[in-house]
Length: 348
Ligand code: 25A
Ligand code: L14
Image: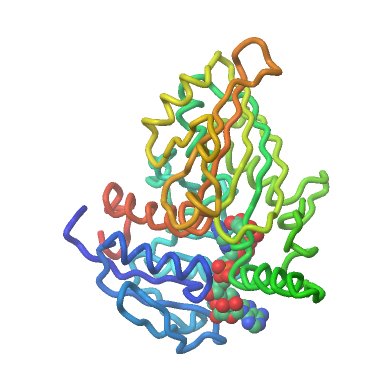
C-alpha cells in the first residue's frame, strides 16, 4: 500500500454498519490522515469509537466534503440520494452501501474478490452490493469461471442485524418477553421474529417477489457480468442476531463435481471451506459466521435430482455487517487507493 494518507468520512457512523466501518478501518490500518464520523442531527456530539480513539459525531446536512478523499455511506437510500452526489461533486470518492445507485449502468457495483476491475470506471460513486448477494457471488465466482453457472436457486436465512440496531434490540426484547410469559411487542419486522421465521425482506414488487429477492437477481448479473444467469431467490428473516446463511443450488453448463468445487473453493480468495460430513462439520451463523471476515462454505454436494453432473448444492454463511457491508466497503476503498489512485480527485 502507498505511503499516502487519506481523509475519510463515515456517514451513518452511529448505525450498526457505520460502527463496523470505523472499527474495520482501524483494525486493518487503513492509511487515514483525518477521519470524521457523520450522522443525523439526532446524534450530533455522540461518541463513536475509531480504534482506541473517540470521535464526536458531526451533522451530515451541513458537512463540506471538499477536504474528503473517501466517504463511506451507510445511512439509508434517501440519505445517499441527497448527499452522495454532493460529496462526489466536492471531490470525494463515495463508497455507498445503500441500494440507491446499485442498478445505475454507469455506477460500478463491486465485490473486490469478484470484479475489482469495475472500479476503474467510477465517476465519484461506487456502489457496495446487498449483503446476501455479496456472500453468494464470492462463493460462486470460482465455480462460474470453471463451469459457467446457468441457473441459481437460493433460499436465504437472514439475521436481524441487516435491518439495523433497532432490529437487534427487537429480537432480544421479544425473546426475553416470551420467555417471561409476556407478549412480544412488534416494532421493526413485519411480524414477530422471536421463535419465528418471516418470508419477507424489503418491499413487495409487482411480480410477487420482494425487493431483497430482486436485488439478488439484478446484482448477481451485474457483478458476474453475465445477464444470462437465471436467479430464483426466496429471502427469509430468521431469529439470528448476526450473519446470513444461504442454501444455494446451482446448475452449470459444464459438469462440475462436488470434489472439484471443493478444490476450487479451497483456493478462492475470501472463502473458507468447512465441509466435514459429520456432526458440526459445517459453518453456522451464530458460531463461525459472526465477527469473521471470510465467507464460509459447507455441505458441498452433487444434486442427486440431476443425473448429468451439472448440479451442485452449497451452504454459504457470512457476517452480513462485515463482508456483507462494512468490510466489503473498506476493501473497495483499499483497492481504490492501491490500484486506482489516479481516479481519486483530491488525493491524485
Ligand atoms: O435504504 P437502504 O439501503 O435499504 O438502507 C436502510 C438502512 O439499512 C441499514 C442501515 O441502517 C440503513 O440506514 N443498512 C444498509 N445497508 C446495510 C447492509 N448491507 C444495512 N444494514 C445491514 N447490512 P443502520 O442502522 O446500520 O444505520 C443507520 C445510520 O444512518 C444514520 N442516518 C439515518 N438518517 C440519517 C442518518 N445520518 C444522516 N442523516 C440522516 N438523515 C443513522 O444515524 C445511523 O447512523 P442517526 O443519527 O439517525 O441515528 C442514530 C441512532 O438513532 C436511532 N434512530 C434511528 N432512527 C430514529 C432513531 N431514533 C428515533 N427516531 C428515529 N426515527 C438509531 O437506532 C441510531 O442508533
Ligand atoms: O440492500 O433488512 O443493502 O436485512 C441490506 C439489509 C436492505 C435491507 C441492502 C435487511 C439492505 C436488508
